[in-house]
Length: 163
Image (tube, rainbow, N blue to C red; front, side, top):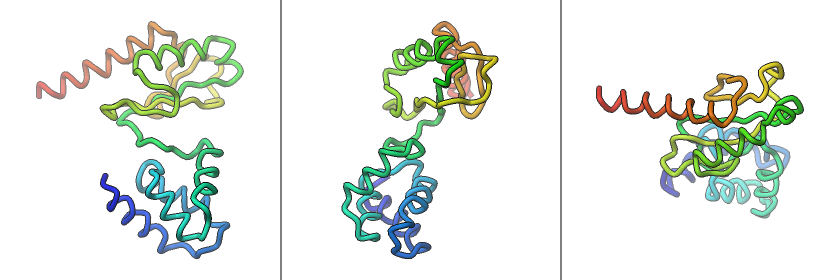
């Protein structure tokens, strides 16, 4: 998306808000809902609209983990690091995803196929360690299962190319 399109979308969102500083988080949520993430240009528009220093807006965005600084991938990968998942190898699972996708937590692959992040708990402790793929919890995910899940996505993509 071009810089001008980002600004346009952001300005459209801002039309439905007053310039109260207390609207910062709802504005950021709405902008992210529209764009999928919060690019620099959008944060600058919000800062100007509310009369806040840009660093203040950036500070809020980086403080709350609900906000994204990178565009989302086509498929989301969320690795649970809650207590049960941590004890059963959640960090090993996260490392496997990082290696296989060549990205870190909070990042998106260059082809925008996958984004990777961590979550505190998904409430599926009995299935630990859990990875949530596109909103679907997958249990007992170890590095071998990571390979299998990625292979399934690859085969699905190849099947669509042949059609």
